[in-house]
Image (cartoon, rainbow, N blue to C red; front, side, top):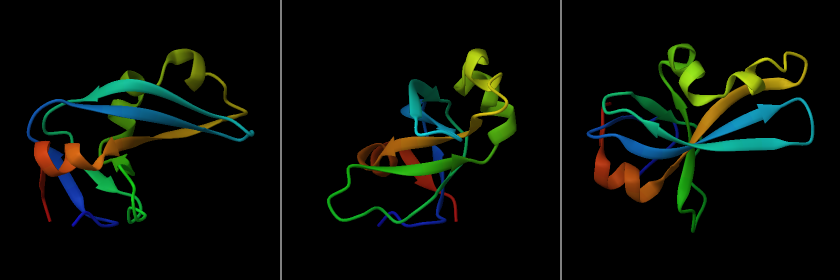
Length: 99
């Protein structure tokens, strides 16, 4: 069972959605690939019936440039960071639990 704070590592490159946070009533997102071996932590327990969960990459700063376009990162006053949305089936099938 996938739960909050669990640490995972992809066994192969996986498709994710990179969600961007803003200090404004807006959320953006980009289809990205999280490379094999790039660990992530589950942010919250999945709600009943969920097909995906939000996660935080462990190497947040190192992945920032590849996950979020320059034009977003330059919006200093409103851009507030990013997180990943990963399908539960992807975690179950293509990742291993580290902890």
